[in-house]
Image (cartoon, rainbow, N blue to C red; front, top):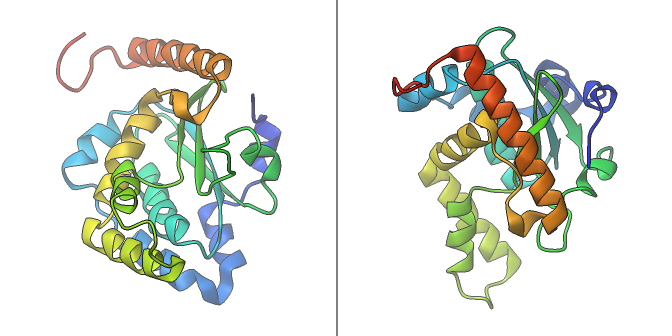
Length: 213
């Protein structure tokens, strides 16, 4: 399971993606401009870098437009020494990547895959914050899709990106695929990669933000 550097470079930068979106960029820009790291700023700045993040997106999908612009904004303010390079691929061009990360039997977007400077995969995030999924799971199962979409939209408005930013921070630091997102062999392999990357990151920064070694 891998995404080559060459494939990553085929993605759009944030500026290029806004050009691709054209008139549809307004909602993306609104979420980007409204994103503030707040109390997470120091934690994001302490992330070992460089990092590379590939996001597979649905340009009009609710989960994508509510989370990916915030992730891009957070990555722009993360770490040092090269920072975080984010590339965006629409789902219709990223099927080969989505096929490697099946969520509950489906190819779900957005999907954000994180690599360190040695191109070890250190994290995977998507398609929505766990709190958002728990909110949906708590709703009546017989609600029509348009009502579920309306409720989820309200949840995102109330959350203001806080859940996305907290979760993605953990992914950006280095965390493997959760067992429910991949088979046992794949999960174990990615966890080993993540642990290797975290160890290398600690060696570069010396001490964690809480002052411990």
